[in-house]
Image 1 (cartoon, helix red, strand yellow):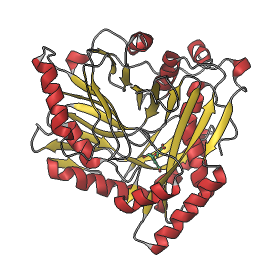
Image 2: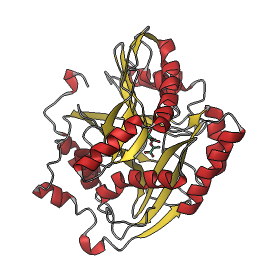
Image 3: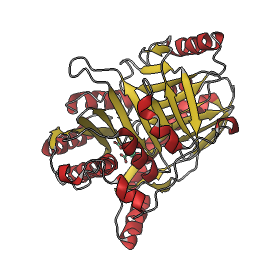
Image 4: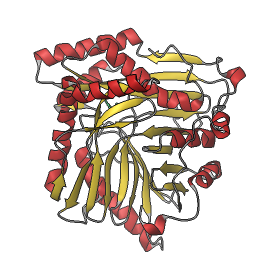
Length: 411
Ligand SMILES: C=C(O[C@@H]1C=C(C(=O)O)C=C[C@H]1O)C(=O)O
């Protein structure tokens, strides 16, 4: 972030230290890397608890009073605004440089492909939640709701439960995610042990391309994404898909709903807000997205990044429009609890500066088990088979990183 945070430590050094930390939190962007260790205070309130922002300020002030000059709060906030968040004040904070860009077909790339050894790479079990046909029925259900109510967008997601033949090497996985998603935000957040299912601690791991909100001083930035198309290995075809996405009325509509809502959530905090009239294109390794880069200047620079995040969440990029109808539709159609998926992951310092990204292209990892998540925005004109395919493509960010890129049965 700022100059003082740029040390000589590299992102790779921090990744290598991941296992040595207690309750590690790792976050890397195109500009910096962050690894924290330990926990001196936690906040487990729900985002809709009216005391949450003052509680967070309170634990940061306490940490300062105990001699921690500029403490951070880090962690993950779930999709459901009434579910407990998982934030903590780490005891040690290490800033480092970003990860280098992956060079295609280099020895290190080959080496990084071996997270799951080749003899084990077909030896996994996979379970769909829901089955692909049921997911498509859910999309049909949403299309009916558009005709019968004022719901005009809902994001429907699905999960894949994969049981692995060998434990994942977390530093390996993080290196691969970060090197292959350099424009995005790679994260690993330790989650509390789920006592019902396992005594192991889970880790929430992913590489999100979507910035919910960044604040530094009086300057804020948000980069909502909505409207997606799969990339192609063929250059011409890839470009054609990008152009088609930019011209798609359905995707432009899906995107516009998000931008209107982000604009009205943050405009009240801003002296100036610059929102481009038309979206542009960004790409990840696997997808094109419609993207709008929004910059603003705060009226009151003391407004914290979590205050803004809380005003924004959930945007129609992950929930829908209108929000309350979309929430109901999600609760009725999706057969699983999203947990932290489509919530936010990030950090804030005691001045309220920080960066929070939308928790997508991610998985919960627990010893030999992996739960992957992916969703797609459904609007009038959506085709169930296409939305299913879009979620299959979104799973690839994690599948590629764990070395299961050959898994065919995702759609
Ligand atoms: C919900 C996801 O992605 C969101 C939905 C998108 C879409 O519908 O086009 C695009 C980016 C994200 O805002 C996901 O990746 O799982």
